[in-house]
Amino acid sequence: MAFSWPWMRKKSRIVWLDLGDLGDLVNPSGPHEQWQDHGLGLLRTILHQNGILTDLLSTRAVTSWDQLRSQLAGYDTLIMNVRSYTFPAGRRSAQIFKEVNPDGIVLAGGMHATVAADEMLGVPEFDHICQGPGEKVIVDLVRDPRSFPRLFQGEGARSMAEWPMVDRALWPKPASWRVRRRFKWHWPMEPECGWGPGPVATILTSRVCPWQCVFCNENSYIPNMGRRPVDAVIDELNYLDEKYGVGSVVIHDSMFFQNPSWLKEWIEKYPRKARQVWPYWAAGRSDTVRQWPELFEALIRETNWNLVSLGFESGSDRILRLLNKECTAEDNYYAIDLLNRLGDEMAAGGQAPPKFWANIMLGIPGETAEDAFKTMRMLKRMKRVFPSISYYAPYPGSALGFQLIAEGKSLMTKDNYHRFPDDEKVKGVNYAFYRELLAGRYDDQVNRGLSAEEQRRGYAGLYASALTKA
Ligand code: B12
Ligand code: SF4
Image (cartoon, rainbow, N blue to C red; front, side, top):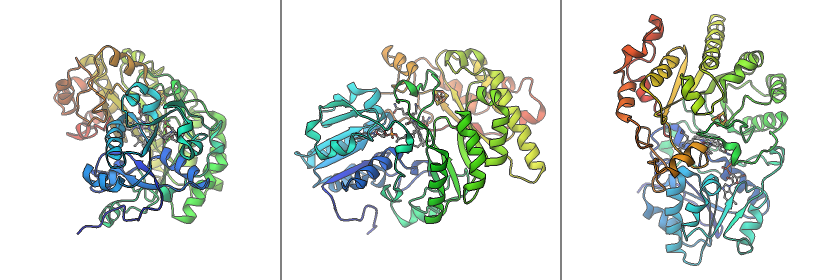
């Protein structure tokens, strides 16, 4: 008989259900499936600090719905953080919960509740649905759900300075010692994913990005809030290092490279006050790299920002305009050439050179073959890169997503928001062309005008294997 998580006895009548694909913590196909949910971590921490203890289950820790059914039996309250890509799992779980606990109450919040209330309201099993942030309402809601209407607006902290440090021991565990061993997973820290040494600390320093890219535009649905103070971020990392050990850091902010005054303070304090200058992954944009090159260079050289996630998206100005990216192809090339140069200098000095985590989108409605060739050419300009390529996905919440859904062109349905890398997402897009492009079929066109070295980059299969879930 195999023992698998959760092996604990029920301690509470309230259960928080972590959502994700079945089996992701049992037989993970990779480390990214094992990343933890900060919404769950934050709200459970707040509940526990207020004396409301919750049990934890996870759809990622079971391999069948029947297994989940038996685990859910006997609870009074079910709580979930529902994002669009976990909506199908959330809905199914709520239905199962009601089957086994007909008098139980389901409390749901999260991004999908915020951007697609109609779909949430269409599921009768969701008893109370919170739109927006939940920090200031979660305690009252769990204490007395009936005092809340079915759909209501949550309330968040004015600043992340008010957030408690997430109690990471409240996150789900790897489902077995095999997973623990295979990924060298030092729970409650997160496992190594190829970006830096483990144990990995994922953290948030900011909550929202002020730009308005039409495929994302988070600031239309995430209220603005103050950034976490630099000292608090460093204190948390030092605390985690003392308690569990930290090997590297992933800063999960949508946009780390913003607020120059915060970044300057980070440059000044992180190398001095952190127990180690851990390497980290964090995100930026090419136009601001061009606007603040000295700041960018100082972050790379002095704070060990060694994996630079940039939302390049496209190498074509026409497409960048269509996406309202407010970056030009020239901005993208500026950032690429700058990191290439910094990497060369650091490598020559015996230091590990920084790399790009390059976010690239293909299959954008209206994109021509020549636009896509420009994007692939741009990718080949990067000397050191992990390409993260995805087919454009019309998520609700974003301006372009809403438009395509309204026009009936989205192939992402509420039964299957969570799409796999090579799934087709928008009607009318020629996905066969993109599959061939990534397999190298159009290399002659892509390589036009590139140097011999650039032509060799992206050896067979690299780009095709770089397609990510989206
Ligand atoms: C970190 C992050 C990731 C990480 C880790 C994800 C994880 N395990 O949590 C990684 C990189 C893996 C990731 C991947 C993806 N992500 Co992501 N990610 C984020 C990001 C930047 C931060 C999430 C976060 O921690 N927020 C902070 C916490 C505290 O907020 P929260 O979880 O929303 O919880 C708050 C409220 O929602 C509410 N709440 C939540 N639950 C409940 C429950 C109750 C009862 C109540 C009252 C309130 C409540 O209160 C909480 C506190 O305020 C967000 C954008 C953002 N700024 O939030 C995108 C975001 C969630 N991701 C998104 C997407 C699309 C993806 C991908 C599909 C992208 C891709 N191309 O691969 C993948 C899918 C991953 C998968 N499983 O397949 C979208 C989701 C859009 C949507 N409509 O749901 C977002 C919003 C970004 C965007 N604008 O596109 N992501
Ligand atoms: S895609 Fe990036 S830059 Fe654009 S709004 Fe989203 S997080 Fe901000």
